[in-house]
Amino acid sequence: MTQTSNVAVITGGAGGIGRAVARRFAETGARVVVADLRREEAVERATELSRATQTETMGIATDVTDSADVRRLVARTLERFGRVDHVVNCAGTSLNSPTVEHPDRDWSFVLDLNLSGTFYVCREFAQELFATRGTIVNISSIAAFAATRPEIHVGYDATKAGIIGLTRTLGVEWAKYGVRVNAVAPGYTNTELLQTVGSDSPETVEAWLSQTPQARLMEPEDIANVVHFLSSPAAAAITAQTILADGGYSAAK
Image 1 (spheres, one colour):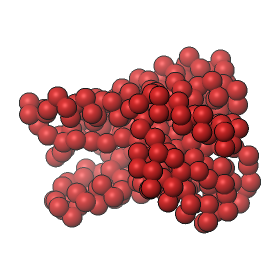
Image 2 (cartoon, helix red, strand yellow; image 1 turned 90 degrees about the vertical axis):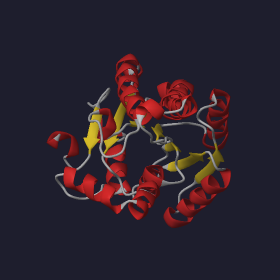
Image 3 (cartoon, rainbow, N blue to C red; image 1 turned 90 degrees about the horizontal axis):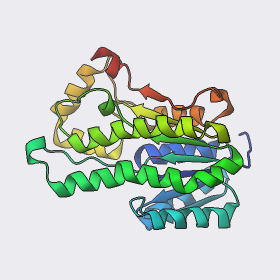
Image 4 (cartoon, rainbow, N blue to C red; image 1 turned 180 degrees about the vertical axis):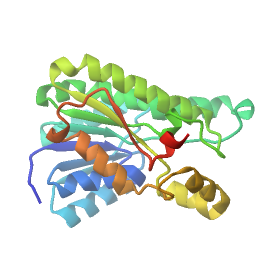
């Protein structure tokens, strides 16, 4: 394991893609902040990481839809570790319904969490990343590139497309500070949420697989590997970009 003094902050780090991303950073020796809405899960995941990888971690409850809470996350991170090198925005959700039936509250909730939350985290960590010439990786989705079927989630699609625009703007604006901002757009990924869908509606999973040339779900570790690459010196020339990690789904559309 290569040791490093880097500090990585992962929002939505207690589960799904975020959990795999946190582990990938910890495996390379980074000190990791697992930020998640549920304090118990954040602390538990951080403790598991520390035991498994022998790296220093911290779990902290954070509501990314509350900019003041995000500022507290920044302060707690600096208090514990003194710096921030990498930020990965994995916090997000989807609420599905036909568009004409989509409630105002669902639209607002997904917008606040997926897009505004990503913006708040980028903005509040910016000065610290300027100081370390750090990196940001945001999580978008194949839903930003293609209208997915059979599920319908208009708010999710719109916010994941918005994350691509945000990533492009910040990547260009902050290049002069040495900060690289990129995004990953995963395909259908084998998280706890998709496992629930698979149990309730196996025909939906079959439809996803039939539309994916690799004929498989992505694994959270697949996405974590791309995130880690974009955060590494190997990607020094890459900024303001979105990398699709979808098993060929978008290309086959």
